[in-house]
Length: 140
Image (cartoon, rainbow, N blue to C red; front, side, top):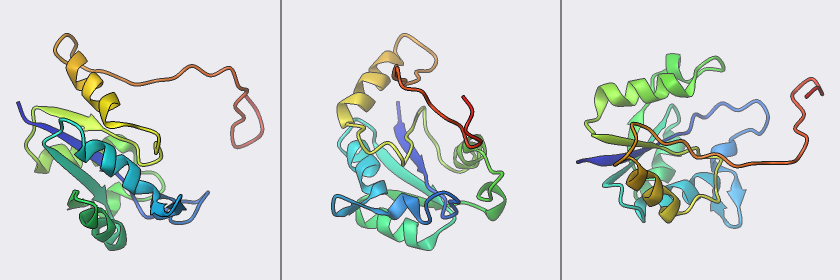
């Protein structure tokens, strides 16, 4: 079985410009997701982006890259559109979807998720929170 990971990382961000490559403890944010994936049982780590800068940084950290078309990279683009574009262009049996904005992910988190795929069709990682989360308009 071929296990690959995909880290979508478009260049546009309204909240934090260039958030996927912003410095976090001396490394670009995307580094942490790439590192966890390359240390995991995933055979290949891929970054999907519309940004040459993000793609080049990702290559330097050991990721393979796929250029995402602009129609899957604008403000209305969904993660699903990036995943479908990837699936149409790269062969795999198990796809691990890693958010670039999850710098605390570790390789053993990925490995445990893939292990659970032996019993389930899909696996989703979540965490419980007791914090109040406000949306854009200041409402819950």
